[in-house]
Image (cartoon, rainbow over all chains, first blue to last red; front, side, top):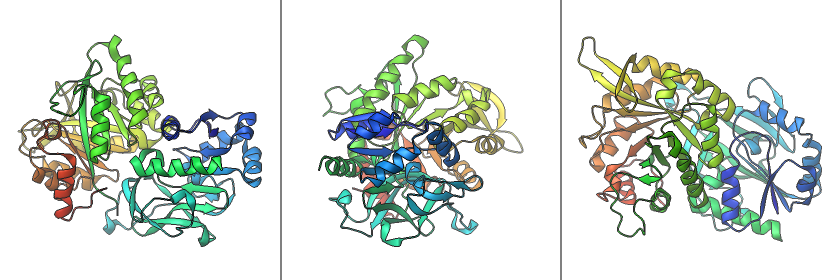
Length: 207
Length: 255
């Protein structure tokens, strides 16, 4: 069973349905017992960083999530769920994150002459930097994925970068660090290739 | 590079697609779930359902349609039509919609946009605006509600600025003058609004040819183009359109 963490931010339904579509058994939960039992954990989420951290804190599951990750449990953060993994965010002042991946979450800041809108919303390509990761198995370089975000991550250890995406310059669109993965785009909303990534994740969890 | 989005829109009444469906290879050409899935497989970048169900009692049908669509179509889904309050928004998102589109409700109760953005995130709040040019000097583009039946006296440029501040994540702009003409989008209006705001704009109304869509994405500076009849009547497929746009040098997702 894969646990999708239910912490009151955004739409968890589409992640659940996409995983079920590839054959996974899924539980949307914030219960400690179920999170412990799960073979893998997904932290989804859209919305504000500070609210999300506060909700996780109120649910008292932050130490548990860190513990499970430390024990080697497969973990995937999607969009805001990826950003929460980092050391801190510059959203709405400074706010501490889970600090599982060293780095910062920053707002897009473009010069006017670029005419780029925020949020970065729509389909964009990923340039794969680390082809060894099984989670990207079967994903051709420069494939399109669906993005919607105003903040992006900067990781300290560049070896953790799995892919980059260009929007007024390159930003990190996916990371991999041991058993922890994070994606800025939404695999659950990215058609067949998105489903392929979730299928890869599911298969990794069954290993 | 971020691509321009092509978004087919389906009008749904009592759970059935009402206008223009001539898909020979679908078992049930009036089933929104099947049509959405078909468009998804053709390369649509998102899908919009517009609920035009008249009776309040039958609105639950739309939630079932959304739920079933979310089980088999894995691209963003926006639902608009008849949304009046936070509960309506919540129900649609919980059923599997990714965004909701507010039109009349946003005009009559602007705080709904703000509350929705705070509660569910800006990215899921689309504000749809129906606009008609008034033949007066100085020229004015006026916002209409109730499916274009009610004039509000509101100037579109002022309204756009306000909804952006309130927390709209995206604007769906329909030119009532161009809508249904198949003579092309209102390029001037679309461009002026796109240059004015920092959130994406979806242009709607008037698409009759592939060139119209290309024009609104370039000269009209729209981030996305919505079309209905051009796809429904099988005049052009989404794939044909995208190949045409790609040849013209417009960034689109072809896979």
